[in-house]
Length: 342
Image (cartoon, rainbow, N blue to C red; front, side, top):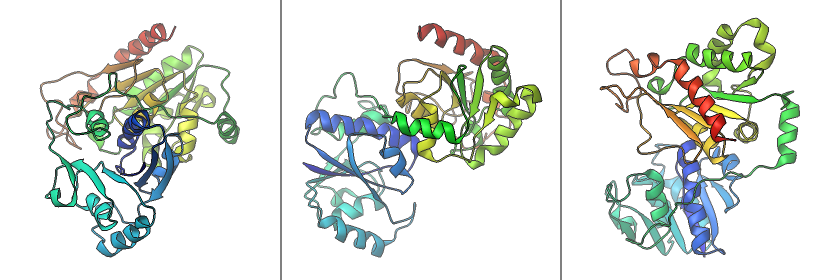
């Protein structure tokens, strides 16, 4: 069965979508899965062995682009897909499968798009409280029981390619690696202060480890803040890699981590999908909807009365849910993970 999945546009959501791909393969080992998604997703999807190909979405995020959608649908029509599974809930995301005349079009009802879907599901949020459950449910007939346990994302790594990446950045694994992920695309209300990350980094370095800071160019200021506190004597063991790596290189380097400390972000989901020992700092958000899908994880938060607010910036102007979170809590969580990892 040849299946087109209309994928999400966020790193973390695409990682969680791998649970759907795995479920489709469990249901039908011969399922031929193709994912339509933004160009950046190709690197991530390349680490998912269930996916046959990534098809570039030529329409910008948020753009209606009817003529572009029709043109892409015309090309997809020739691929003879048997089913389309539409993960985003937007009206626009359901247009291309409809234009392409794909016989079975599956998705959740949303944004007045019911007429574009002929397998339109009505979501019961109590039945499927987690985003990953809502994704996996679309692999099966409406109302069917989900597999227990749910399949977890599991990114694959090519060891030879990873070695090339390590050499490119002059990195070695002689001492334990702590990866820090101080960024979050969603907004400042998800970012633990750089000074707090720096205290965790200093503790790790003082115990004969090394630190790699991963993220996009936008996270460069946070990385500089960490380095400014860590101290010059440790700079050779604390590497700022923000903005220097491709997404595939980030995945390869993350796979080398002995421990990871992250905000609630796409890199958090990547670390979980690589089975890393992971500490996640939560501020304005909550693990109740999109938790890291792994076993060896410690969640650290203050659970203030004002959180989670799910806002990009703190509506009260203080971000106490993050600023008041003591680095010692994260250092303790890392020690507890060490025991879990034995």
